[in-house]
Image (cartoon, rainbow, N blue to C red; front, side):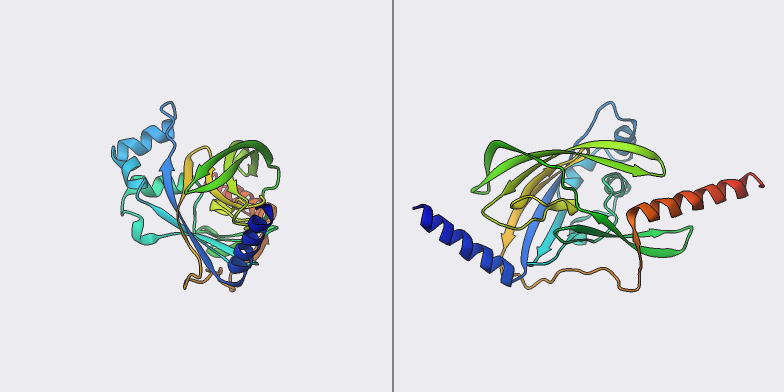
Amino acid sequence: MNKIIVVLLLITSNLIAQTNSKFVYGLTAIVNKDSKVDEMIKSMNLNYENLISGIEFNLITNDTIASFSINKKTVPDDGAVQMFLTLINYSGVLNQTKEFLFTEKKYDHLEKTYTITDIIYKNWQILEESKEIMGYKCYKAVGEKITINDAGKFSEKIVAWFCPSIPLQYGPMGYGNLPGLIFELQTKKALYGLKKIEYNSNESVALLNKNNISIKYDDFVKIIKESREKRKQMMNGN
């Protein structure tokens, strides 16, 4: 029986590697009643949580790269929804390899568009806890993401449920580097849950614009900080 399972896993792995696969994720808002930002969003639209629950993301993968992007057809034209998407740091297509994450950022004051390279999060602690999602056995992994930008240093707890039966080291919002596809990802503000799997997909991985300025994340943070300092000096007449 074990040999049969191993053979099936190898067949599945080869199938995924040879073709593009599409994984559709739903989105759930995690609301903190004590958060002033959450209170502000709710004041814009009392129904924003229901609107957000209809949003979908597509993860398109092959054996070397993946792209994670929002399905624009599922995004309502609503200010509260747009503010929430900004809050969860979604700014457009994310490209991901096993080692690196590539995101596109446009900083209006510089009038330039950048492709920012960052290292994939790796500090996972894999637990023995498991649960079934969509008929697949998934295992729990936890981590703490530290983000340093021009506004300061921030810590965020992350919970992922990954599936070894689908041996892809990808997941929502550029997270991955686990021994299996992430079926469910919980961050501070959002829960991403897998809804649909489509092998042999006709959709291709979405690549970022080659004309963007390539830059490392740390260097991009320095540029933004310097730009804001210059604007402050100009406003103060220095």
